[in-house]
Length: 284
Image (cartoon, rainbow, N blue to C red):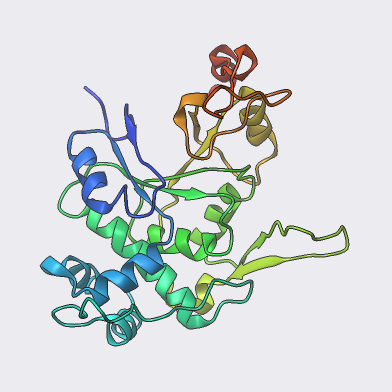
């Protein structure tokens, strides 16, 4: 019999609201690891509230958020009883930035809490959340919100998430987290950083947090080996992604060749060497 620490099947897609709390909860109830998509959850929460929150699920989760004044501000800002009319546009939101406002951080944190809370509600199965390394600006407050809801696993791909394991470690200690940003067109003298202070965010009332396990999504043992050695904290395992995964998987090695449909052609060099993964001594 499997234990809570031994998930076998991982479900989770990164399409916005495709791998929702409902799907993740359903998978978790079967004894597997259900994974919610962490992409654009702040936008989804704001829009779902403007649509009237059918079923009252979001309001139920908001009532459990450990800082009620933040949840109430979001309700006051976005909730429309009965839902907005079809010809009324959604309320505009500011784009994420290197220096977000407290309002932006609150929405990101609360939205991630809500999605994970609902996925974990009324059962003790495993729930994870999946983020993209290439979408960096909301990453740290997103992690914090998911951790407030007791997320069991954090999964991340679409890049090399070297800084995420250490960020999880700092968040559970209530320490400031600074995430170096990769900016297109920047030169070697430029420095861009996203900063989040959990103690400041909570007004010094930081609740006890448990560190979720971190799984890196990788396409090769070379990348897995590098992360094992050079990540700024503990990597707990890997999701090995092959060429048929689609989405954000790596391009073929060597010179790019396309088939008649314009799709990349993968070869033997692109097949993950599982024996090399076994030698790392970590689950995959």
